[in-house]
Amino acid sequence: MGWFGGSPSRVSAVSEVPEKKEETFLEDLPPKFEDNETKRPDEATYLAAINKISLSDFTIDNYVTMPCFREAMLTGFSAMGVLGVVTLLIHKSPGRSVNIGIGGFFLGSVIGFEQCRSIRRRSFQNVEKAKQANQARMQSKIDDRQENDDALEKFNETQRK
Image (tube, rainbow, N blue to C red):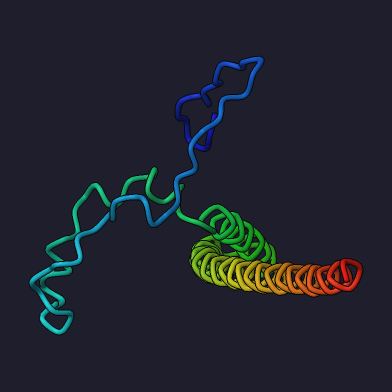
C-alpha cells in the first residue's frame, strides 16, 4: 500500500513459457499533446493561467506524487520541531516558539525540496553521462570488430591466392 492509502499492487499471472512481446518504441506511440495549438506563447497571460487553476489541483494525491515532496515535508517538520522546542526552552514564550517553529517549517521545507531537486538533477546528469560513455564504448567495440573483420578478410584473400 502506498502513502496515504491506495490500492495494493496487482500481481500478474506467471506462465512457464515467457511470452514474446513486441517492442514498442517512443516514436511508435501517438503523441500525448497536440502540436497544432492556435495560441502562441506570447499570447498567454497571467489571467489565463489563474483561470486554469482548480480546487482539484490541491489534493493530497497530487502532492504525494510530486518528486521530493516527502523529503521536503520531513525536513520541514524536523526543523519546526527543533526550532520550536529550542526557542521554547530558551525564551519560555509559547507564542514566540510557535512563530519560530512555523518559520522553521517553511524554511526547512524549501531547503529540503531544493536539496532533493539538486540531487535528482545531478543523478539524471550522471545517468546521461553513463549512457554516453556506454554508447562510446559500444561504438569502439563495433569499430574494433569491423577492423578485425577487415583483417580477417585480407588474411583469407591472401590464403586463397
